[in-house]
Image (cartoon, rainbow, N blue to C red):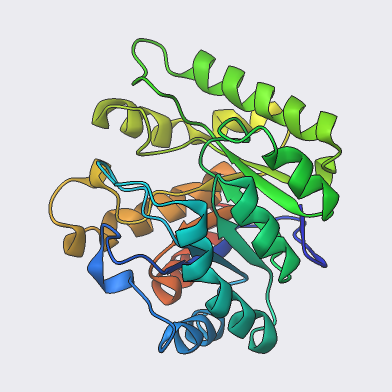
Amino acid sequence: MIIGNKAFEGGTHVMAIINLTPDSFWQGSRRTLSDVLAAAEKAVEDGAEVLDIGAQSTRPGYTEVSAEEEISRFLQPLKLIKKHVPVPVSIDTYFAESARAALGEGADMINDIWGLTHDKKMAATIASYGASVCIMHNSKTQLSGDIWAPIKEFLSNSVNIAISAGISPERICLDGGIGFAKSREDNLKLLEGYGRLSELGYPLLLGASRKSLFGGRVEERLAPTLAATKKAVRDGVMFVRVHDVKENVLAIKEALADGQGHN
């Protein structure tokens, strides 16, 4: 997997969540222009190898903001981070207009929670900049019954959209979409069998950090998040997208020391 000018060839790597939304589900992760650079620098110091900037909350029941509002939230923070922080930067958006603005300012990857299906111009926009993409599974209706067939079909179709638009296969990774269009039971089932998605032939990204499938209050979900990260190492997942960088980096090291994965 290549993001920007960095090649990720194995192991499990930490992608740090940089939230620029006033309504993200965990208040402790919210950033503004005044503190975003310090947060990004600390994430890298703690071991993050990719930063993922989100300017629209996608928590359950979220209210969508426009591409224009999204851009106004991330543009200056992105410029700051690209100028001062030496790791690849991803932008979490499903609007081609937002992607174009971000890629024009040097963003390296688009993390699309609708897997290139929400905005028909998205794949071509990413391809035109030679950028990378994370394709996530999503659905307008909650899955029922067997989850694996629809998830794999969606991701395969989205990969075809990406390839047809000219996105390089080595710049594609896949996300099963924990927390999106799935019951808690199905989210747990997806997490348990996450490695099955590697059958599609692309690197995987796991986004389970502090999500509601773990139950309890968001402040109490670090321990199960770290357990999920250790499992990701065992499953050969390439990226874990997390709020707590230092703790997850340590969890990866512990899993490797226990012989649970391959560096």
